[in-house]
Amino acid sequence: CNVVVLISGSGSNLQALIDDLRAGDTPARIQAVISNRADAYGLERARAAGIPAEVLDHKAFDGREAFDAALIERIDGYRPDLVVLAGFMRILTPTFVRHYQGRLLNIHPSLLPRYKGLHTHQRALEAGDAEHGCSVHFVTEELDGGPLVVQAVIPVQADDTPESLAKRVHVQEHRIYPLAVRWFAARRLQLGERGAMLDGQPL
Ligand code: GRF
Image 1: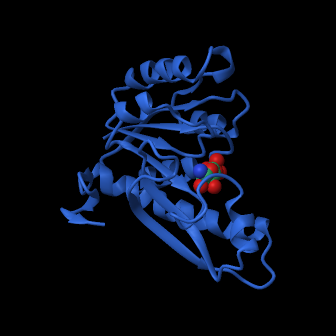
Image 2: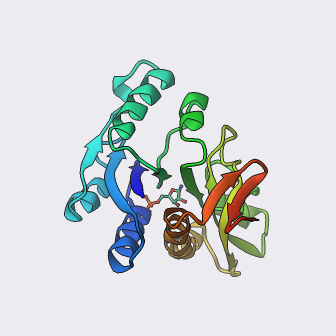
């Protein structure tokens, strides 16, 4: 399974994937890491792991369509079976999402469908939620709205801040994202007509 990972920042989820693939016998290989920001620390993580690390700066393009077209070309050069969004902070065009339908995964720091978009930890706290967490989902045209693959739940504590929550959610992200990639690489995970399927059963 050829994997291309898209990042914009720290890349701790990328690191979790690198470590998991290195440690196990998953039939998957990260062919490249592409960032829209030259200063993304995840690029260094990729290089340290011997993975080609590239920058495609969205600011060099005239609009989303042009950027996404260039991004598709760059990604497809690696013949990916799976494209993994790991903190890629760009809204993708319908053209892009359709091009990778069924082979595009994202991780989001909330228990979707709650708190799509930004500032999820803050919003969970403000709502007084007893539980919070993260979700891996197939990407569709609806932002953070695609079929769920796996979630991890953590209890919210009385003294939690957005930062403390983020920290504990990240630990769970690093657990469930590699799990989803393993499933996909083993051909156990698919996007069916009515949602995500694991071993032929709806999730
Ligand atoms: C994570 O919180 C992820 O859920 C969100 O962006 C963040 C990326 O973190 N989509 P990192 O760059 O993997 O450390």
